[in-house]
Length: 240
Ligand SMILES: *Cc1c(COP(=O)(O)O)cnc(C)c1O
Image (cartoon, rainbow, N blue to C red; front, side, top):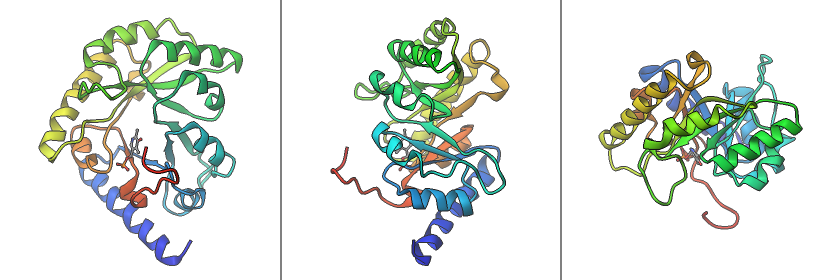
């Protein structure tokens, strides 16, 4: 990595952190690291205080996993979250590698997570993904179904619901994003009351590069930021 690149990352992280400090100091910054080389991820872990990373593709996560630093300089474990759409047949590859699966959005996926968790004799922390924009093409549970889905999940002994995740639709303004995030926050609060394990620790994951300021102001506990930290993504095989 060039000194110029390091300086750029330092600036980008500082900019996002300033926004967190101003709007919601307790929120966690998760770096969305798809397409980001491990060298840059490790630089951020070693020098920029990064503690949480999110990957969205199973093959990419597996490729990078061994070389991603597992601890911060002061000895805290780095958390790896899976944030992308997860195919049921791929659960087995990541079950022992991720701290949280943020994209639990259907019963069949819960069944497979339970099955793999039993095999590995462990409990898996998940967030329920909510499709707050009710968009046809997007994954996530319909907002009206969240309560019922959480009820169904209580049957899975090895799945611990630790929070909720959402991706807002593409909006043109802070105000427009704020409406979606406020609604999501309300769903989170309403359902945490009864169904989310250990609700004091429950986490609401919302806000990306173009929306994290609005998400923080609406009460996000974790923002997932990619391109604002690392620059525009270059996909080797073309855009998704
Ligand atoms: C890529 C990604 C992000 C971050 O997107 P940016 O717009 O680059 O900040 C956040 N969440 C999920 C689920 C993603 O796939």
